[in-house]
Every structure is written in C-alpha cells, then in structure tokens.
Image (cartoon, rainbow, N blue to C red; front, side, top):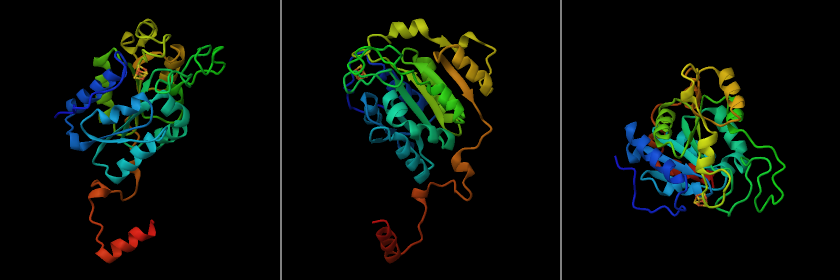
Length: 284
Ligand code: SF4
C-alpha cells in the first residue's frame, strides 16, 4: 500500500502541510485502503496541491469547491473512500456555504482543513481564521473582523464528527484521520498547519504554547454535543483531539431510499447504444 508518489511537493521548507500529507498517507495505509480505493479532492491554495502528492485518485478543483466535487464523487461511486482537503481561506471563506451544507448533509467524506490563519498562496492576506488585530497587506492597521470559529459552526450545523489537530503532532493527527476515515458520515478535521513564510504570529512555537490537548481531560465525553460546544468556547477554539462524534446518525448515502451499496459508476445502465446516445444528448 504505497500512497507516496514521485511528485516533489513545492511547499516552502517547514510548511505544516508536509505533515498533513504524511498523516493522510499513513492513515490510509493503517485503515487498509488501496490507492485505487481512495480519492483525494482539493480546492485552491498551497494546501490544494495535496491531491497531486498522494498516490490515489486526485482532483485539484477550484477555489472553495472541493466539497461539491467530493460529494459528486462519493455519490457516483460510494465504494471509494473520499477525502476532501484545502485551506482555511478555501473552506471557511469562499467555500463556507458548501462546508456548512456538506456538514449537515453528512455524506461519508473526510474533510481535512489545513488552517494556517492566512492566505499563503497569494502571499499573505488576512483570512477568516486570522485573529482580530492581525496585520497583513490586506489589513495594514490590523483586522477589525471577528475570527470565525469553524468548530462551533460545525457543531451548530449538525456535524457528526469534529476533530482538531496540529501539524507537529503527527501521531495524534494520523490517529484522528484514521478515526475520520472509519466514521460513517462527514468528518471535519481542522489542522493547525503553520505557514512559515507569511504568518510570523501563529508559528509552531505559538501553537505549542496555546494548544489545549484534550488528553488533559481523561473524563471528557466526545459524544456530548453541549459539553463539546462548551469546551470549544472555554478554550477559545484551541483544543486538539476528538471533540465530538455522533455514531447514531446514518450517513446521507444510507438514508437515500433504494441507494444501492454498489457504486453508481459500476452499475449496468441496461441501455443499448441508441438509448445511451439519447440519454447523453439530453445533458448536452
Ligand atoms: Fe506553506 Fe505558507 Fe509556503 Fe504556502 S506560503 S507553502 S502555506 S509556508
């Protein structure tokens, strides 16, 4: 099970996204996937390149649109394991509408967000995840907007799996991605993934000082939504670990009446050539 390919990532040395790539590759192998049973769909941004760095089916989509494509892939062939990925600008700004509805729809997809709290690819502008007062070229006097809390939004939208991790904690990150892949529904895994080139505030050291690891709370119950919401607010969204999981709610695929276990892409259309051409013509 080799999820590495021979493409050399062109991320900056030290970028947090390298660890996310490694964690996905390890987690995919650990849960027993084969390259041909995994599809990685990404948006636009430095992190969006990840779909090209993993030996699996890949689709580098457009800005903020990883999730619509990932959902289409899953519905067309539910036998594929589908990972969607992108950055905080991609998923929580232009793509936020899709993120919220994908969460509440609950298709069996693992969404991994590389959250560096800045726009890296476009050379460092304030993102929805940047803190108030954060100074960049787009906010030279400091951001006057409040910081978006993806964990609170995910819980409010009916998420069935919410986790958060840190690029420096490869063991935890790999374990959470494994749990997300095994979860029967939509899993959101937000990853603090430092942009070493443009974000000089939210550095590796800064995250190490500010992260609250849920391992500190052995009695924490990740199946209680109210507890999860309180803990997110109490830690100002800085906690890492499995924050919430609901194993009771069925996935979207399992709730569609008559939706077969075999992927649509593999099913016999039972059409002759003329009928097939007629069908295709209807979609032109
Ligand atoms: Fe990573 Fe930032 Fe470099 Fe982009 S600009 S590759 S996010 S370190």
